[in-house]
Image (tube, rainbow, N blue to C red):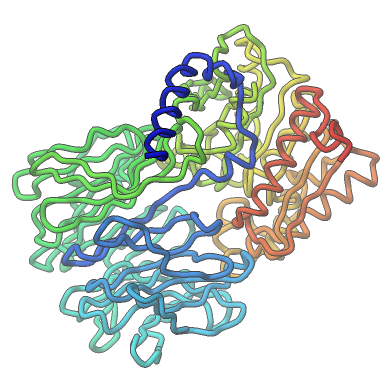
Length: 633
């Protein structure tokens, strides 16, 4: 009785206080960066052949781990690796997963066999200074194929492993960057890749009975062939390739005997970036990159009839069939943390499998970017995504951050970026640029910044920044620039080439000196990087375009963030740049994590990084003192 009485009284109080309670909170309240860092993400869905086991990757614990959904839809954590996992591959029967995990961001990945129901882990490899990746199961779940550079630290060979015994053997030992794509259902054939550079590769067909192989994709010049699947009759391979007149990646079919390639479409403007074929061979799903957005398509293979697609507009990825009539995939957008979904295209029903933690933040607060096009030199237009603080219009000048993506053979895409949303809600604008050299726009655009054309892409960032000023979005004294990896190099290049355009910069795992970078990067990466930046034997030119050679031009305060264990861009790049600036009396701040590699992965470290970034840009672009100084901490 008393409990019921108090429930009635409490309800009455709540109802009476309704309108007034809304006034107890500041309507302009924006959660701090720590709260933003709690926003989750679920991705990489995989499902067993019978649909009974559903797995995905999530950062719920603070690092990427493997999860499975129970029959009730509850996420159960399967792995507990201290530094998280790099990838996983679910067996066809759903009983096991091959997991790749490294220590401290070193990318020296070893393989583990994990039982999905119990989480029991068995180490399959225990190698030092080795990178292993791309595990591919045989259809009977007894063996895997993978790539490893254990032989000499430089070349990636393809290995076969008996999962039960852990015994392995090399089956393809061609010099270079080899790896497995797909194994035939009968276990007799394996399609592998060999990359000469990031923009050029071949496919090999390996006879697993006698280990002979043949090249499936003889070609001249640069061309890519990827996303491979066998046709039902085993006479052809479905692939994606840009080996056509305009260099646009499209769906194609290769005749295994004649090696002839037939493109399934022509004249399309945008690149196709992935496809999947249902196990019965009747349906194809493919994703088209429309200037950053990933749009899904489905069709009947026999008739070509397009099938219904889910009513989601953003970035769809990781598409996998779940039986003949359903697909699973991940979906994200600027205001949508990534989650895993299922689409039944026969009945047109959409089910959300996972629900990312939003840390109590109303997602309606988040801003949607505008895609803009900016004229640059040589008649080239570049695309960029413009994020404006809520309520901001042209002419309302605000502090701005120009963002440079990595790669360079990559692309900024309108995915969910929590710190972008934090900056926008705190009054910052962001311009994320896709300069020449970015992926997604065809081979010609991709090649526009190679070797001696490097500075043309730097010019694109200058033109984008001047566009911000001309459009009255910002003034030079309130514009900063940041980026990671190659974007870190571009950040440094921007403040050396145009020192009066930027008031602050943050370089994250960036290249400061192309000569030392190429000498010290991991052996297996050097050849691939030389094809983009230029050969080490032209060290004079490489040094000439290096930011460290032009450090005396820098005026902007600079923060440098790096991981001690970075195998791609060694931490020496950060240290030599910081030293060069300090010796000249410049303003430089460094943040080097002892337990991270090429970028920060752990949530605790990300929180430190983003707090420092926020304070740095607030101080130098908004003239606000860091929080610790304001509070005397």
